[in-house]
Every structure is written in C-alpha cells, then in structure tokens.
Image (tube, rainbow over all chains, first blue to last red; front, side):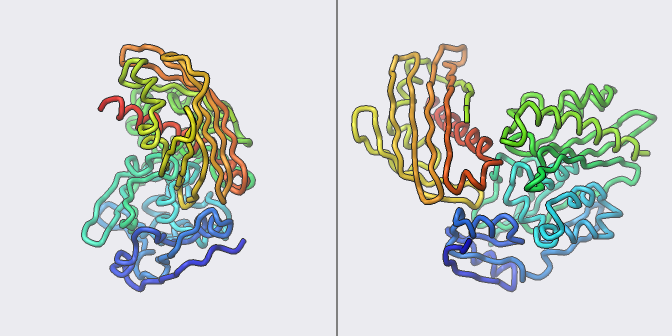
Length: 280
Length: 145
C-alpha cells in the first residue's frame, strides 16, 4: 500500500497548473479514485499536479439562469450548498448518495466526472440536467455537453492538456419535479444502478421528462426512448419498461445483466413517481 | 468470464477473414498494442500498454491463431502478463456474409487475474467489452480503407 515514488507539484494558479500538465503527469483533485490506485500500484504516474491549492475552483454560484459549480467543489460542498438546494435540488440529492461522508468531504465534482467511472452518480444527474462542462487548456477553452462527455467507461473527450474547471447546469424551475433513485453497492457505495429524473407538468400532463441512467451500461446515458414515451402521454410504467432497451447491460459478481436491467426499470418507475409527485 | 458479441465489417467474409489475421492490422487494432513480432506460423509475441482510467500497465504476451477454416471461422488466443496482473482470452470468431459486408460473431472466455482482478472486479466485464468493441471499430475502419 505504498505508492511508487512520484514528483509532486501544487500550483497556486490555474495558469501554472495548465503549464504543468502534459504526458506522464496526472491531475490530482480529491484523490478518491487516484490515490487508492496509486497505493495498489495500479496507477504509477511519474508526476502529480495537485489542484487543491488553485483558488476559486470550488465556488458554487447561480447567475444568468445557470448554476456554476467549480470543479474542485467537494461532494459535501455541493450537498450542503444553499445555492444548490435552492436552484438545483436534483444535484444536491444526487451527491448526498455518493460514497460515505469521508469520500464526500474529499471527492470533487471535477475529479469524479473526469475519471468517468461507469457507475458514478454525478453523470446521471448531469445528463438529466443537460449540464455543460467547461474545460480549459493553456490557450483555448470549450464547453462540452454532458451527453458528449461520458463516452465510454473511463473515457471522456478530455485532451491530456485540458482541465475541467466547472460544471454549468440550468437553474431548475421551482415547479419542476426531480428525483435520484439509486441502488448502492453494499461494499463500494457505487451505483449498481442510479436513475436521475426531471419532470415538468403542464395541464396535468408531462410536458418534459429527462432521465439519466448510470451503472447500467458502459457509460451513463439518457433514456431518450422513455423520455419520448412520457412526453407523448404514456404512463410511467410503460416508459420505465423501455429504460435500457438496446443497452448491453453490465454484469459482475453482485448483479447480472438481467438483474441490473430489472433494477433499472423498477427504480426508473420509482424515480418518475416521486418526481411527478414533486412537480407542480 | 464468458464474452460474446457480434459486429459487422464492411468487407466480404474472405477479406474480413484476412484482415482479422493480418499481423499489421492486428498490431494497429489491438488496443494498446506496441508491437507484434512473428515467432512461428500464426503465433506472435506482443507488447501491450493498457491505459484505462488512471490505471496503466505494460503487458508482455502472445497472440495465436488456430483452427483455421477460411473464410468461415478461426480461433484466436490472446494472453498477457505484467506487474499489475494477467489476462487470457480465447475465442472462436465466425464470419458470415451480410448485406453490409460480413457479420463477425465471437464467443469466448476471458480470464483476468492478479491485483487488477482483485480490486477491479466490478469493472472487468465492462472494460473487456469496451476493449473488444474498440478492436472491432478499428477493424471496421481498416476494412473501409
């Protein structure tokens, strides 16, 4: 449990951090995935660039119809943020279910999404929120839609010289209903399946539905087929029954593909019911 | 662990059969392959560097092709071992003609052991599928060339 020797830098500014990253260097955020891998020597980066001392990367604010969460905001910061609670409750509800209190105090939103674990909780919520991820490199920056960001297991469009700096999500309409339903793995706390839902009602019907699914496939995805059914007037059970259609479901010792798919549909129905009851 | 799947390649079975056994193409399409040297008829020594998430490791291994029945089927065995663990995969690849070119089916068994399997159990199958998919996506590109 002792890592391979490595160089360590703790830049004081983002510009310095951007200057430092390349090749064998690895960014360190909260270290909740990277450090254990290093201790097992599964990861042996030659040089760590710690973002922990870069100021301003952990701010959470709402402005211009959007909520902006800095990449180094910990899960605990997000969970307890009054801004998140008021403007983006789905995000707050989702982070509250990540890991345990120790992990939530160290782990960060930027670290979690850049790692792109196929069973992480954040991606489901970011997909349901249609969030954007702002990424910068030394001489350029870009916004990546959540749906384009989670490409495959541990695979994102991030280039080696890019850093995730913030996540932008639209401020949720207060009449909107939301819910994150999760079946947590008893040992790891990761989502065996996790379903994030947003619903808007209009005249007693569902006018908008967004469903983000994590844990089921090789990466988090939006259940667009179920969203379309709901928006077309179908019932919750009919919509939940198509979640994961066409997805090659994950399977491990804890949950077979068939069981996972079943869990996803049952929990999609539960999430939709709760979201609907919360919507006005 | 059993793995199975099917992919389509935009080339007739005869050509797909050749591509899937061409050492130059294999070297380019096996994810992380850094070199493939022929050691005997249908047998190659391989150096691989796998990098998934923050995990990275070098593997030395070999690729063997056997039970050749052109252009219908063959068996491919891939194995590798490195500091972080070992993997062994063995499967039968079956080709059939399809409208788009050919349909490639594979059915096999993958074993992963060592540290990586002890701590990564939750993700091995997902990762194995992703690697196999990358292999066939690359093959599909080659078939188009």
